[in-house]
Amino acid sequence: MSIQVFDFSGKMIGEKKVPDVFSMDVNSHLIWEVVTAEHANKRQGTHKTKEKGDVSGGGKKPWKQKGTGRARQGSIRAPQWKGGGTIFGPQPRSYRQHLSPRKKRAGMTHIIASKIAANQLVLLDKWEMEKPATAGAYAGFSNIIQSAPFFEAYAKGRKLRGKTNEKRRNVTIIVADDKKENKLSVKNIPWIQLLHVDRLATMPVFYNHGIIITNDAFEKLMGKLG
Image (cartoon, rainbow, N blue to C red; front, top):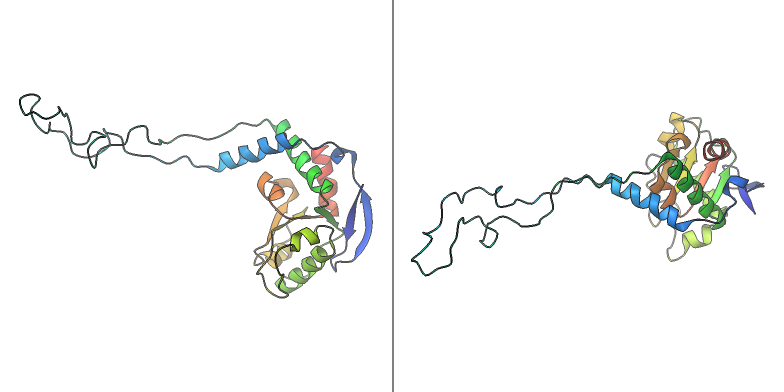
């Protein structure tokens, strides 16, 4: 199995054999674990409902204990009263799930392996913008996507519009440098997620319709995950 290599004009210039580090049976349960953990770790957990002691008022007993013929009541802020406290409502808590660094690396390896197996990953030989140019970046990545093996699934069910950001699905671009001209060129293209290979997050790598990774970033990624 091989990975296609493109230049920035969208022309395929070669193929690269899939490295051994990504040649394995994909563990879908491990991928589920790391994706679920990242979702959970993003939750703030600041939800809170007011209990009986948090609601203002109700310090006085509504009526005397006996002799009225009515049920005994201690406070108008008890849960059964309108405007009273909530019982068993959500309280602030941490949703954090701990994953060892080893499991995180393994999870990322299997996500990349799953993208390769599904033909959703291609390599970009070189990407260097001389100056910020959204139109140039848009044209280059559009050409690569249309030539990539995942384009048929990418375009299925929607009409892609030529010079607009509408009707596009997310594509993740992984690079090995922080070149300002490159970052500014794709900043206003909403369907492009630009990531640095040293700061990869599980969700943008997993939730996309294709990955375009530069050659130098791919070499660095193999070293990190291998």
